[in-house]
Length: 65
Image (cartoon, rainbow, N blue to C red; front, side, top):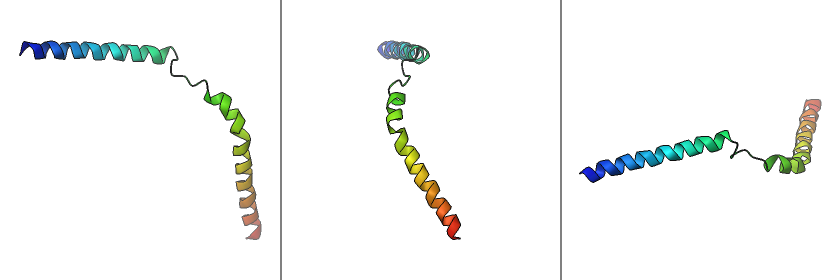
């Protein structure tokens, strides 16, 4: 029975260590996304073209009404 107490204690200590490591990684910017903004500029024109088409179709519908 004493082995269970030791295992529970060790598992809680390990979980706390991983939690501290995760919080430290987030604070130092480990999970910041540096790749997406550089790729987003390549596909930005496609988004603008699609929104322009949508705006044009909406204005045409309003003119026909």
